[in-house]
Amino acid sequence: MLLAIGRRAIPSLKGRGTANFLGTDLRLGTLSRMPIPLRSNVLRMTPYTPGKPIDEVKRELGLSEVVKLASNENPLGPSPLAIQAVQEAAPQMHLYPDASGYSVKEKIATKFGVERNNVLLGNGSDELIHLLGLVLLEPGTNMVVGNPTFVRYDAAAHLADIELRKVPLTETWHHDLDAMAAACDSQTRLVFVANPHNPTGTVREKADFEAFLAKLPSTAVCVIDEAYVEYASDLDLPDSVGYVREGRPVVALRTFSKAYGLAGIRVGYGIAPAEIVDAIDRAREPFDVNSLAQIAAIAALDDEKHLAESRKVNAEGMARIAALATELGLTTVPSRANFICIHVKRPGQEVFDALLKRGVIVRSGGPLGMTDYVRVSIGTPDEVSAFLTAFREVMA
Ligand SMILES: Cc1ncc(COP(=O)(O)O)c(C=O)c1O
Image 1: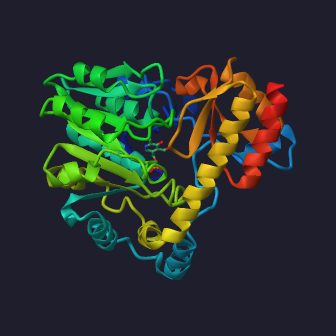
Image 2: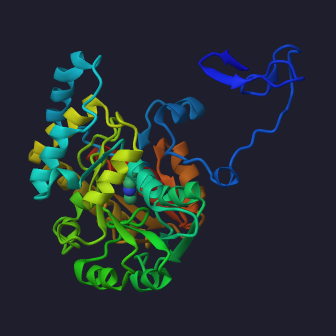
């Protein structure tokens, strides 16, 4: 017998009264404590810890001014063109989005010189990482990543309950591409390389990368996660999209969350072999990228002015922070992303806590795998000034 409670229908349990999904015995009004058979691989996972929200810090510490430099967002906000497009599209919110993402895929395909069936769209690139795991990883396979690296890669492996091979970064916090290639075998299905990398901001340039790709087994799909690539476009970067055009098993993963300033509306994209796009289309939810997100992405792609300004503010803020670190006798990891890691020579958590008390939220390096570091997102000039003042006090 099926019993409907709220919106869920579950079987009632014979001899135990009527149970709802929390295990409460409704007839007796007591907890029946029936074990819930959750998957052990899921229980081994830790939930994602986002940067501390501004309002929470204000409330907890009684502060009126708080600056958040913790989540690598664009301090300039979204492109004005995206804001305008979303405002104009808002009255159409009662309609389902275009499930195929036709217009935004067309726009991306034209920009990158690929076919529309080479374009992935996701509810943030986080969703695409998840979906890549879903369509490529199965029992007996393995996945190779750097260590430390962006935590959502690990989640894809844990969800698939497969072996995750974590290859330490080099002493200079770069991906050790030789060691990563050596960690692959015929069962490797996914290799993630964030370039620029998170949490370090380091970059692997084209020559090294191509040598690495040549060593990978043909069964391994290499995801080049270019979430921060717009900040590093003056470098000799791997031609990620070109590799897809050449028919290599490569996915170039991108996002509108960083330089395009659309983190809150959630759009990620990727250029990938058509077979991968097709597989993901089968597995994904049909309306995963909402209509306003699609509209905002199209408008943002046209806003070269906003992109140029975002790069400029980032480069200037980064230089100011690196200069203060040098003045204080500290080193930084050379970053080409929109954040910088500072070696604070004591537990990053202590510096995080002391900055928090002064109304500046950064990331402690500990949970990111960089114990004696803090990671600071680059803010507006005023936000950077607030950080510099607080940091100088804390390190004095
Ligand atoms: C390297 C990297 N990849 C992917 C993402 C996910 O970005 P989003 O889901 O907002 O597109 C992030 C976010 O911080 C990141 O640092």
